[in-house]
Image 1 (cartoon, rainbow, N blue to C red):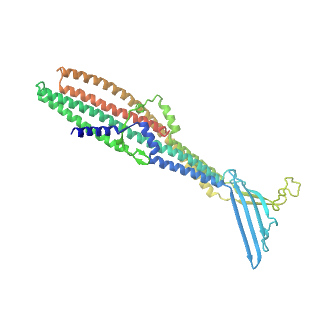
Image 2: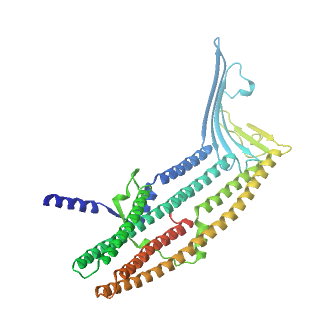
Image 3: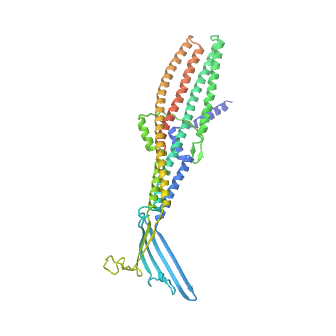
Length: 465
């Protein structure tokens, strides 16, 4: 039997000490690294990187090869071979170099090339529409902008998630502290009951005092049940945020560790937090970048009003030998001989499509400007609210700490009077109950203060940093 009791005590001790301490900073660090919502948002950021790579691909050089040959009844009707390297650029010009070869009896005169083939060097240039801004550059700028938006979106997900996680941890910490206080109160009440029963059996105290103390024990036990339930519920809620290696963990393996981040201090004024919010809140930053998106669309819409005029020029060689000269007096001046030039033009007449698109974008920009005004005022108000609430709660914590100290002094004095027979169980229990109520309220108020502090960090977008 003694061996069984020893083993039981060892198991109980093992169970207690198998729990690991978990600070708020460590918990939030795990959430930021391991939570599936963060990994999901990170995938969207990686997708944005791939979209940017896709947009850059529009400017990749391209090798083109084409060959057509026809032979029939022993005759070579035609052989046409075209080989070209084209290099798009971000300044609108597309450079190209190639080598073409043709032969055959029935060639189209337009396809006839020198016997040694023909090399070419040239470019395609949009003279008006597309010279300073075109569709490919629009896609690239939009992809770069989307990458920045997704980066802010990742920060926003982290910021929101860490706020929710911090509130859950604080609830867990509050219920743990309150459970410890109620447990100690129950132990003291049971000890007092044992002393009272002994005094009653010795004839020193009346029976009614033992009932008074027993009722106090039942009250303490009931309060412990309540806070134990809160602790269990908050621990289960913690499981929604505790992830390690893509596997959810249980808060039963941990206990909250009291560290300095649970006693926050804010020395700055409200204007400081308002400015930090307006310059760091992901919601506002994303909205501002969406305005850049509208400006890109408007720039492209204005470009559509320009005539579509494209110039194509190829310098032609005899075989691989170019004979063009840059002396305009020469017969082989660049634009005198051995070249191919083309000009393509397209001009809308009524511009109804272009005007409608531009007016639509202007409407969207105006809507965005009103939204910016609304969001700026909204987050300014939130920053002021959370800052003022923190300051008030901070003063309340100081008040409750003073109350707790004074009430504890009164309680200790009442115990001395009770031991001397100058007080009653009723007065002693009343002093203890009031002291206990203030302790519980102090723990809860500290938790509310901490929540408002982390909400203040959230408004400024600082939780994700």
